[in-house]
Amino acid sequence: MTLVRSAVNLSDGRELIYFDERPDSGRTKYQDTRELPPPPPASQLRYDPLVDEWVAVAAHRQTRTFLPPSDACPLCPTNANFASEIPAPDYDVVVFENQFPSFSYREVPGGEITELTDMVPVRPGLGRCEVVCFTSDHNSSFGALPPSRVRTVVDALADRTAEMSELPGVSQVFPFENRGVEIGVTLHHPHGQIYAYPTVPPRTAAMLRAARKHAEKTGGRNLYADVLAAEQAAKVRVIAANEHWTAYVPAAARWPFEVQLAPHRQVADLPALTDEERDAFGPLYLDVLHRFDGLFGKPMPYISAWHQAVVGEGRDLGYLHLQLFSIRRAADKLKYLAGSESAMGAFVSDVVPEKAAQMLRDAA
Image (cartoon, rainbow, N blue to C red; front, side, top):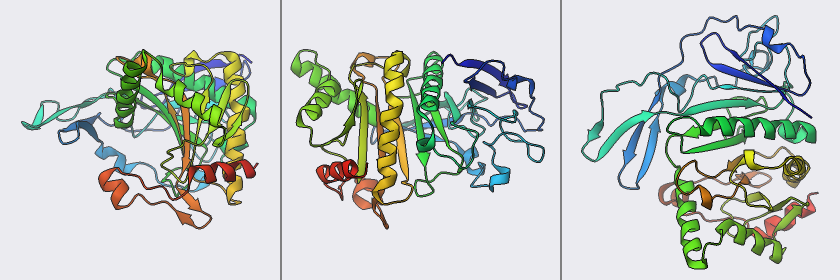
């Protein structure tokens, strides 16, 4: 299948890209008829010297759309009664710049400020945030997509990763999906997001430190490749696998139910996947999602996060993989990040990873 990629601009200047599974869809002839205010200014990054991390301050996100009724969903196609973010009356997969971005290249507020104290420098939150709509069906879910549509999504994410990685100042491109009100979604329509970060996020920085240490100790071996090989050999935490991918519960899983899906070949990011690897991902991922929903007989809230290599220094240490996890620890209980996790970043797991793996295998 050859995707047809076509771009338009919304009435406030933001870019929208259709990824069509058939030619001549004619979607670009539909124009955004709304009168929108200009996009908000870029956020502000403030440095926290106590932990050597940058924190984004994006006050404009306080006004973002919050759980609207289905007939006013901004991610549904436009119809005669409601003009949404997508001007066309239907679509396959669509990507557009977030109206309430955490990072952007818009005007920077208070650009003259360079520091709050001599310990806290400030810089613009330059980058890009996009929304990815997986289907025009408001009542669907990622797990209900056919494998062919998953392939379309993967191709769209690869396209956006390649383009966003070329933007000035971008350190890492992060595609992800939040599902469920328990996770904190503000829109029910099946969708994900892509962040082009202006700094290396804390988890990635920690993974790079560990990968670099392992490479130095082992004469250049890749840490994630060795972890994956060890899990494949142990088998006890492997959920499912095919010719190109393995899905397993990490031995030190932080979340009650956590699975990582990794290609058998070390690649830096989604654009580096072959056609065969892209085709093989969908059936395995859908299988894992169905197992998540089957655990307690109801839709599982989850976060699905693509970990890709950084754009600059340390890129050779990266190993593309998808992290899927849920905060649900039992049918009627959630895992709250309380004192130890929230204040100290020290996780205490409620479910033994081997038990979680067995439960997921049994939930086929």
